[in-house]
Length: 571
Ligand code: COA
Image (cartoon, rainbow, N blue to C red; front, side, top):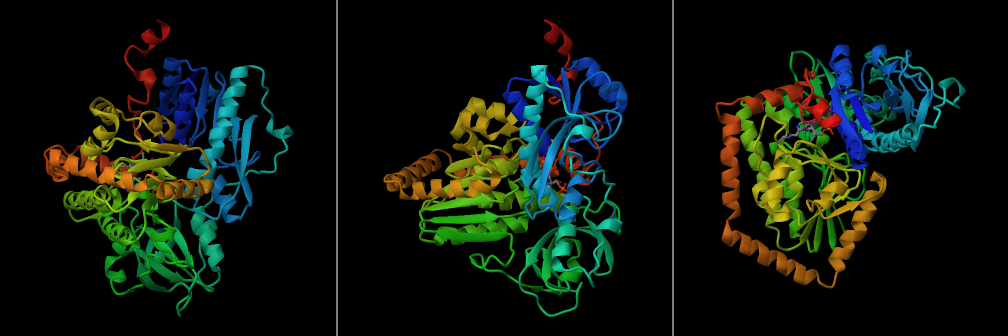
């Protein structure tokens, strides 16, 4: 079928559905929701069999839904309606939630139901529930709905007759989210912050300055102090006391001046945070009660290094800390090191927000790319263990290439990779991609990958030999699968010969062309991106971090806007 996506942006859920439907042979074209007339034009050009709205913030105009079947993906259980579905579900402590695919009609979220899926709720940030449970459920529900539509015989169920326990709820406002530090207990504060992550955050104050809070983590030990007081810092986060405990606030967006971006509070409030004690947590800790971005644990001959960086963005400091943690992992008497990344994202490359906020974004970009390259080099040069990049969450841009530094790359089948830099103002990219990519897939294919701007689902990445395994399990079961495989790798009878082969190959590659030269060549291009005459990267980064609304759909997504589309399609 020809399926048109009407969507606010090409976000992770949209990318996943796009990939799933294309893998099933459908022709999928995308139009961003810019205005009714642009959407109408897209429908007229593409003449879709079906319209799907994976992520829409406005209603579809009646000129479109009255003539085409339009399926809306709603992140709520049947009967749930309104723009803050997940926010209410999290804040109200729902134990089970779901995704409903319903047909657009005159009333928002009240159309006939084509499919629905449910899942147990996890105590986590809204963004994390969206990227995991909602994405998995939406993918199943949309595939079912599309099949039902294609069958021509399915009659969708009117909301009134569906056994729907959901209800219409209003937009959640900041007054609903407000934290009362003198009354709310830790669980309540965490639920409020989780319900507002990564957008819009909870409006509050730090050091008397109005700001929105994001990215909360519980802390088991409560230092002395008054509720609401800020008492320590760790990994860029601040420790704040509640009436019965304490929690870490990992990110804030100041609202006292225009253009502020979401940042670790020790950067957003550098002067005030400087006076706080840095409460370091040991890298290897077994009580699970202390939060920190970096965690290392061991199980027999396998070491696991997790780097839970918010949004997968890796700043200069984070890369340096990760490098130190990796050096520790390398020093251990293990055979395999698993680089776990974070649950939601493995890595999305250099940290565009901290770069944007720096006095010199060009200098900070340079420092950041060098810091991530240093870590990549350490991984590539590890000759005492085999390394595995285990991707439970997505990886994009430099983060996708960073994964290739490991000997093995295993991804959850639902993972979407975006192995390209071009979308960020034509960045050339580094992370030793010019060494890693051709080595894995050959020079021709490497060129194709670098010019492609589309998401690459893990199963396809495996077919293209970019990665070594695509593991078809739910996010919650991924770690166990990885552990089984990593243990097998560590205990394999040919472990020693594998390690020898790795050392020999590295020595051979180094003799042929030193790693330093790959880096030098890549960074020559990057220097031009950062300091050169063409400001494309700085402009693209600004729009990315400022979340500037789309004013057009990129050509590589809007097939129907390709010159000759109609000719090709009718030929
Ligand atoms: N630096 C800072 N923030 C980043 C980031 C990065 N490199 N990559 C993603 N983010 C943030 C987004 O701003 C967004 O923030 P929010 O919580 O305030 O909404 C959040 O991560 C999720 O990103 P989003 O784009 O909504 O996620 P997605 O899963 O839909 O898309 C990508 C993933 C990787 C395609 C997309 O985020 C992207 O293009 N990132 C930039 C990658 C890049 O160019 N890195 C620099 C070159 S190495």
